[in-house]
Structures are given as structure tokens and as C-alpha cells.
Amino acid sequence: MTTWRQHPDQFLALHEKLMQKKGYHDAASIATAVEKSGTTPVTPDEKSMETLSTNLQLARIVGVQGTPATIIGDEMIPGAVPWETLEEVVKEKLAAAHGK
Image 1 (spheres, helix red, strand yellow):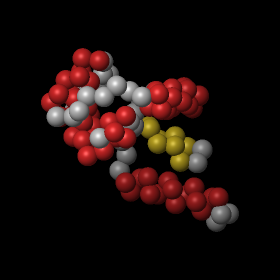
Image 2: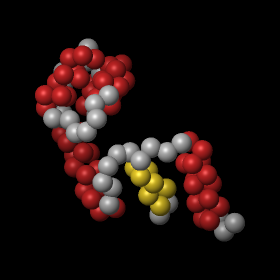
Image 3: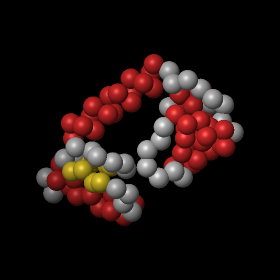
Image 4: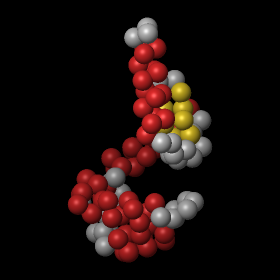
């Protein structure tokens, strides 16, 4: 998130490099991704750390155990799902919210 704010033009390359790794990252794997993507190294700022903390707390509360996870209305959809599935669920939730 700090890279996104400080060097938005470099974020996509870093994101793609980070997403190539299966499993969890540690300081060494993040440093490798930064180096291989040509991204300017940054130190996470306070806003990034607060956002991560809030997101982790929310994930624990709603039972997210992995990523990606999508919450639409009162339904959590774990894992990567096709656009068509997301669109269908959104339409169903909107229809229910409008009494249709």
C-alpha cells in the first residue's frame, strides 16, 4: 500500500511479482520481489500498517481464512471466482434488497 501511494507507477510490477509466489511472504521474499520488479524500496508507513491491522481484525471476525475472499451482502465467497459468478450474486443481492 505504501508503494501504491508513493510510487503508483511501480505498483503493478511489484504486485504481479508478489502474486507469483505461492503461500506466505516473509521479509526476504518481499525484498526479492521488490528487487526483481525494479520497484523503489519503501518502508511501510503508519497508514499502511493501520489498514493491514484493521483488515486482519475484520478477516478474523468474518471468518476469512485465505485470499481472495469476497463479501457481497451477507454472503462470503471464498477463493477466486469467475466474473459471471460475482455478477450473478450481486444481482441476486440487489434484487433481494429491493424486494424483487
